[in-house]
Length: 142
Length: 110
Image 1 (cartoon, one colour):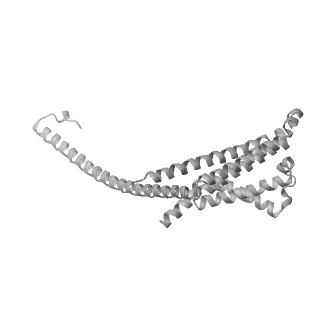
Image 2 (spheres, chains in turn green, orange):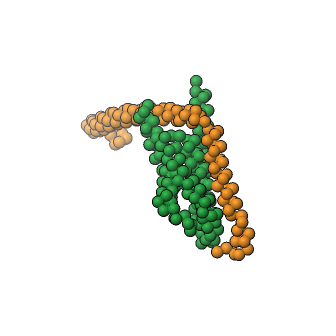
Image 3 (cartoon, chains in turn green, purple):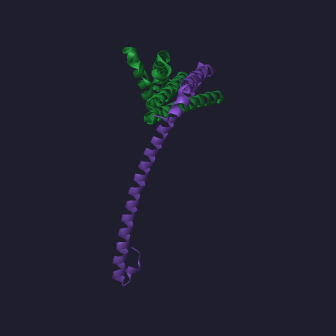
């Protein structure tokens, strides 16, 4: 059973490699800020909403990355879903800020961020649905 | 840059929009955490593990079946080849004897 659980963890992470990549990007973003807090001084978000909300945004990026990694490797879908929703929020905020600052020059980047947000939210809702379905199936097993 | 009237119109809206979508995502995440109890998720994970175990067992069975049918097909092929060889020899013999007896062996299908 322990081997099976380990396999499930590994498989869960490998099958969701895109999520792992998102998580690593979030964590990296957080690390950059913790290493050099001035990194967010002139970025699009701080120019749009100010320094402190940008700080919250960086923390959200970092936290979403940690939650995604935890959710995937510990096979804990509730934390994974939370991480996905959080990541979606952070990415959409970044996307809107970029188009606000760079205008039409930032359309492609904004589209990318908005797509990532949509993907993260759709994935969160899908995982939520699957978890509920599996739990129901488990209860119906004689 | 966008035309100035677009920039002006969206100047105050964007931070609000960011706050709404940002806050909305966090609220949705918290709702998910509250709605999905740890028991629910552990049941789901257990069910997924059970499904995975069943899938592995089915894969093993399928693999065994595949090996069995592959061997069976090999045996049947060998047997068929032996039959064809016997048939070929029989036809050759029929031709041979037909020639001896003046029978037109070319009527036989090859």
